[in-house]
Image (cartoon, rainbow, N blue to C red; front, side):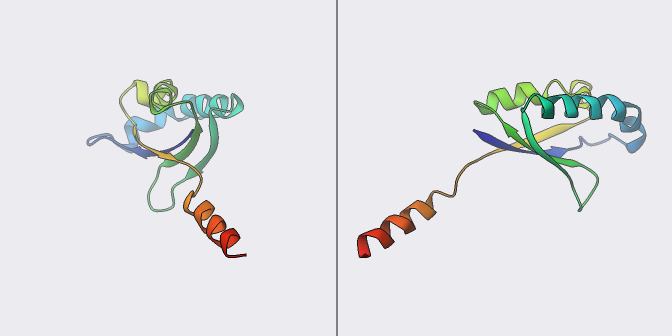
Length: 101
């Protein structure tokens, strides 16, 4: 299962509170990437922040993985989780086309 994890910064958390945690957050993120838990990661262009695409068995596992991040542990960062998968309607289009042939 793939899960899109979009960061959200809790109200009252400032850049000054986040900055000391960036080195450990980066190291933890890279480790999760190397463990193939984070498939890809992106920096947001609309505001400072990150978006991860996780490879997990469940949403609960996604929460557990993200819970290992230092900023999440310190309640300086949270994530909205969205399960994503193949665009299954494309399969219906293919079946429809094959039945017409």
